[in-house]
Image (cartoon, rainbow, N blue to C red; front, top):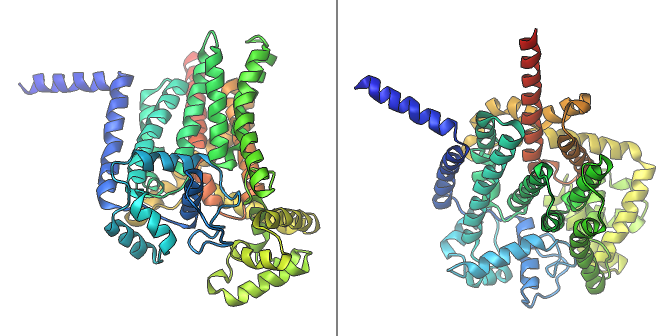
Length: 484
């Protein structure tokens, strides 16, 4: 009887481990458990960024949002002024519209304020109580965490052909990573949606890479994904041209035939999306750009290093010094430039978008005149970017074990590919170039702000490259050894 049970058990294990569909179903089941637990035990997380996204969501659904130079909860203009991009606020509005219960429970709002140690002002509370169900957002984002795990599993399986690597990698990087189910998925931030869109884009590009015949509708779809990703998180602005770059690479290699229809399909959707948003900001605010946050982010390189004296503009230096003297939370804070925005609006007699543009010019002058400080900020940001993210709450003791593995996942693949570029497929080479370009742009523009948060959205792609490259090298070494 024992022998029979053992044989049945071994047979079931073989069936599960040899069946991608069964293993995918198993991984979905396994990653659902911590998210179900988090749904009942945790409440949504609100930060200043969250309130700025909620403000834009209200504007986009037609609410009357009064002008206020600095929303005390959002650290940004209440009427947005081009501060945020539209995809995540539209995502929030979709959830609010479809939610069976239209407001957030009072007990949840009280727990959020108690946990975060701040008061939500009456303006935000009105909408949160009556129209915006934050718990529904949390549940949907838990769902996106599960979907992202499944997408990473499919990518790893397709690129390595190894079920064990795909299963383990998807679990460690996303599925059972506490930074996901106990952290970011709870937060009203863009990160969860960003990673889901990024992995969907990579999966669709891989399917096109393997296709014998490319369907024009598929090109429209991947270019649309790239545009949506860029307008979800401008950090990924290069995603808008990633599908076109991939296609040009294939045309150069003569694996596909040039077609003007394909050029239109790959360029028109992101041009319409991004161009439309820029035109909207230009007409509405007089700011011809994607986001008015750029000028502030560039200046943060210097405020993060406590070097406000590098700016040439006397009014800017005086406004920052004055604000530092009266704002206790701004002392040694990199975000003093954002907190001081109302002072700059008053002193320069300019609207918020024009202040951002002026700050861009001041930042560029400071970079030219004090390149050493800017380089130090970039180096500091790079180190922070590639460090594994700390685990939240009760998971902190596991971080010591995770640290070396997390560091390897972030830098291992990039380093191996750069040293042995020609060993890997063109698809992997394109993803590597995209990764390096995106990281470089992120660190240059916004590295002084929150490089650790910016790294979160890149982690699955960097881990994907690491798993694929190490597995590929191990297989090649095994083949060489076998042939000897």
